[in-house]
Amino acid sequence: MTAFEISDLFNEADTNGDGTMDFEEFCAIVENCRDTSSMWKNAGALEQATKRYNNVLAASDSLFAKIQETAAATCEQDDQGRRVAGCSRVLAQFCVMIINGVMLTLLCFFAASQCTELVTLFNSIDQNNAFAIFEEAVTTGEAPDLTSTMNDLGGEAALMSQLQNIFMKAYIPFAVYFVILFIITFVGWTRSQAHLGHVIFGFHVIDMESGEPVGFFGLFLRNFFTIIVMGFAAYFTPQYFLETCAVIQFISFL
Image 1 (spheres, one colour):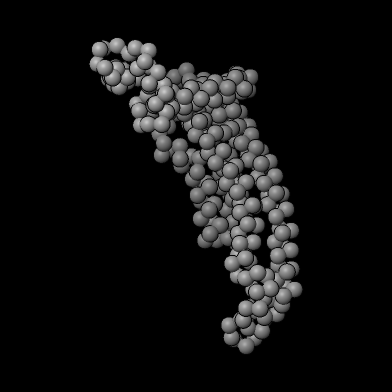
Image 2 (cartoon, helix red, strand yellow):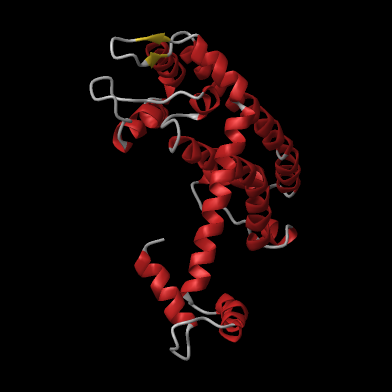
């Protein structure tokens, strides 16, 4: 904290203006700052957040220390004496792919389990002749009358509610996983400026000319450009999606 911030904190506490914070003034700050916009409250929250963040970094360093020492021992040195990762870069990439692959596979199995509920719901619709009604509507060219079917299922709102519940139960685990992955990657960026595999192996992405860490825009392209390209491929040319992904991954490893 700056001298000005510390001065403001003590000025807020020193309510009688005698230049010191006595015990009564200290008690007032402790008891009241939690429920107000006091600078003491904000200072405490910032301090706690910083401590927790540093604890996470320290824990990750301790957890992956052996891996990082082994990776560092396999590195070569360039003309400037900087260590340059060799094959362990590929291992780091495989590492993050395996972690993501295992987690996404488990999530897909969980999402597939929700399909039974969806099948049950569609069977109930089919039993109410909804598909026959639609077929008749296509044949005659008239709008289908689903009033009786919707009434039997509890109404259109009830049907939509059931569908939303099924899809949300399948979607939420994916959302939680990607939020956690984003947080871990963000923490890793402050150290390695790279993806989760680089965090584990302790690698840093730097500009080889200046030796400085790569900027945010470069990191963003490095980590997410291939995902963006594959997203466009899935949207505009879904019939070539697998081929596009295979080519991009092949170029990435080269």
